[in-house]
Structure formats: C-alpha cells, structure tokens
Length: 259
Image (cartoon, rainbow, N blue to C red; front, side, top):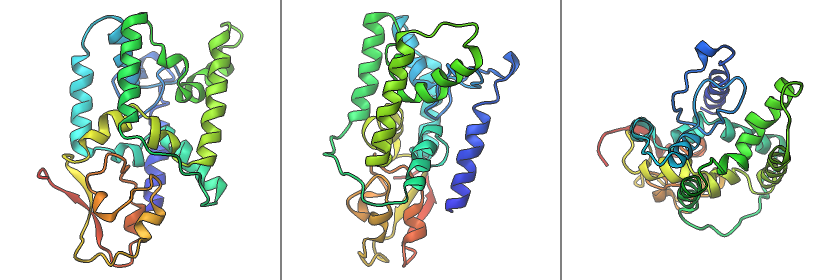
C-alpha cells in the first residue's frame, strides 16, 4: 500500500502543475493544499479562494459545495494520498530515516483556528494576508516564480518572508514530522478532519481482532493515541501505514455511507 500511496502523491503533484498554458489553468478548487500562485498551477487553492471571497465580502458557495463533496467522499484521505505539501513532509521524514521526533503539546482544532483567522484577516484587511506568509506558497509559488519570472518581476519583502516561513516549516518537519498536518493545516484539520467521522471511505479497526500490540500507533505519522480512535479522529490522514503494520489484519479500508 505504501508504494501505491507514493504513486498517487506523485501523480497529484504532476496534475496540479499541468497549467503550462492558459487553457490548462482551470481555476477550479482542488482538495489539496497547493498554491495557485505557482506559474504552472492547474487548480485554485481552497484557502486562497476562501480568503479572496472574504476580502470581497462575499460567500464562496461553489467552493464550499465542492469541498463538501470532496470531504464527504474521502475525508482526510486527501491529506495522506494526494496533498503535495503532505508529500513534501513525507519526503523529509523518509530522508531523515529516524523515529526520535519531538512531541509538542497537542491543541485540538488549531487548523480550524488558522482557517477562521485567515478568513477574518482577509475580511478586515481586504487582502489575502495568509497567502503572504503561507509556507506552502513559499515552496510552490514564491520560489518557482523567482525562477520563472525574475527578469520580469520584482521580488520584495514578502518574498523573503516566504523564504523565512519555508525555512521554519522545513525545520519543524525535520523535528516533528508531518508538523503542518498535525498542528496548522486549515484545510486538513479545519475542513476535511471534521468530515472524517462521516466520510464515505474510512479506515476502521476491528477491535475484536485487535491484540493491543501498539504497532499501529507506533507507525502512525500523526500519533493517534488509541486504536479505537483511528476511524473518527480528525487527525487521521488515512495514510494506511497502520494497515500495513497490523500483525492481525484488524484494520481495513471500508466504504460506507453510514457511521
């Protein structure tokens, strides 16, 4: 399953960068955390769209509806199997190849607070302020734009702010592992995590088969505390590592419209 997941992550990274011509710049909201400021971006970032509508003092009906469909179908499967920023974090962990990560205090709903804060800031300032400091925007937009347009565009203060936030993010990825997904992501925690309980696809442990060995918790990149929490936890990114690790095959991917 791990090889399949890497394949879907890399495929997503390829698809979101197909916007080499105006015809391929669809501008449709995508279910992953990626910056539409990238010179080759195919889709629109959901958080960027929400901020834009907030700055316009309007409600993003189509974006909310589309993201609602994505969330009801897969919940945070998008985080574990498709998100380009999640792929970067997985790559950092893979390169690091060590398990001695720092464990920070966990505050529930931090991603939701970031989401609401970004929208309120856009509403007040009439600008997409969160985009100017977003570390995903640093990696996927600011740096590529510098390579693609440095002869045509001037790069001021916020470009260096982006470099700074990216440097901090990469350090946190090395120290904590999946730091963004666990603590800050306004899309994964703030939106998709809420739908984990009701999404069509789930990862569900069979507690009758579980022998409480703890293997699933040891391998979990978001450090879920108990096996019975896997199915409905807002933190679970549905990566499937617990499925591969479970010695009793007690954890399965299930598809059901019921809770």
